Length: 209
Image (cartoon, rainbow, N blue to C red; front, top):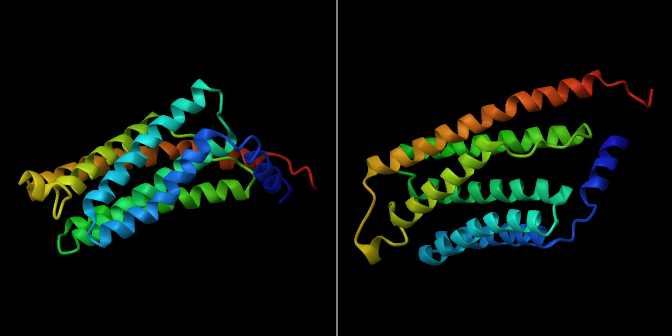
């Protein structure tokens, strides 16, 4: 428990930075996106999600350029990503509820729940979840590109009425499948580091004994 409290204390050191506030804004916009989308304001909702995706790109660059990298930011950024991705998947599941592709969308929720539970387990043991590897970043970028494209041009898409174009169902399946494969590779890529951290923690002598 002492390790856990120490880890939490270190987590909030130097937390008041522009990148962290951008992450807070991204998290705050997630329920706005969901409500607007489900209320039928699809175009506005998609614009908000595109803005949050760009914010995700800028906060990391700002943190590195202005030396505002923080422990909280390393954790907050992926949390904002996960919540954003889950929000997108939820509205797409609702949109495609009458299509078998909804089961493939559910895979993304399962993946994020696994990541959240794994991160919580590490924190409970006084460990810090590892930063995203290259495949994690690739999977995130592919996810945003594919899903925002589907939100814009898929079933009941934001730009379908404006452009007169709707994605064929087979193209939607291809986009979601590519994103799912990248996400699976990313998830498997975290496993070795996660297991190694748990083993190292288990082998460390308990200083309280």
